[in-house]
Length: 419
Image (tube, rainbow, N blue to C red; front, top):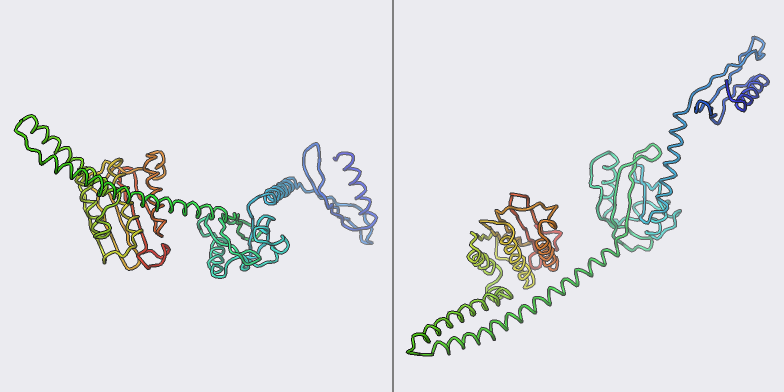
């Protein structure tokens, strides 16, 4: 019935049961090579009235599937531990009503300044800023219950020395020792945040230098080149001649000087519109919208809702440049027949909405649709970010494009409180 080595072991076990009269169960399943099956065996003594063992009942059970499951489970656990212990990101598993830490790898312990033993003894509330504990625990409990929540977001952790640092978290629901739990993968993004802040600072400096250069060039064009052209026109216009051919030439020269003057003035205004400094953002926007519509033969409309906008000079310049870029993009790419610009103000924020009825585009393929538009969008967003604002774009193929530029009003809280 059995291979020799197993048969010998069974015979010895039967003899043992006969001598002792005790039931015997094998502690380790046995593998039958021929059938590739695992069995475990229970030997039960059968006794007569005097208590003497007269026979042994053997019961063998096929535990191959159970064995395979146990092996797979051990292999899976070994793979998980190998992956977790060698991961550069921190890995944390929390379970129970208070989100107790039941597993942590070396990376997350080092990230927070603890040894692995210390970290496992530290409550979750100690590594989360106090003002965020309630939100984190609520999010944890909802996730454990099976609610669908965002799987990735940014948060903050506290190190052992009390220092707060930003992390990017990826969360998922899991099972730990039969109980619902959450598995978190945490990445310290302090360096990334510093790089982003440095990039924003450099971009802000670049925009500031750019605006100063534009203002200087605008001044030179308007006050220097414009005056030279005006004087040249006056001097040329004072010429009186009886020769018909010369008169025609003078008239043509005067017409070209007029065109040059208009071009210089338009260029000077586009670089730094005097109306923005003299009459404010509202009049400047309305004038830009009207003149743009006339220049490209597109119907335009401007509306304002709310009290007069309260913005700093930098904020007004940023909003004006965003409108210039948005109108230019619409004329180049959208084939729009109508553009509507709305300026909505409140005590807390100013919102500029630019909506066209053009062909629109797929937002996910914006970089493929037009590289120039993608760069323009980044430039607009950077300008607004410089003064605490934010940019939103909504578009779809055949559905037109809407751009929303929001800036906190002068003296209002930052963009987290924008209406």
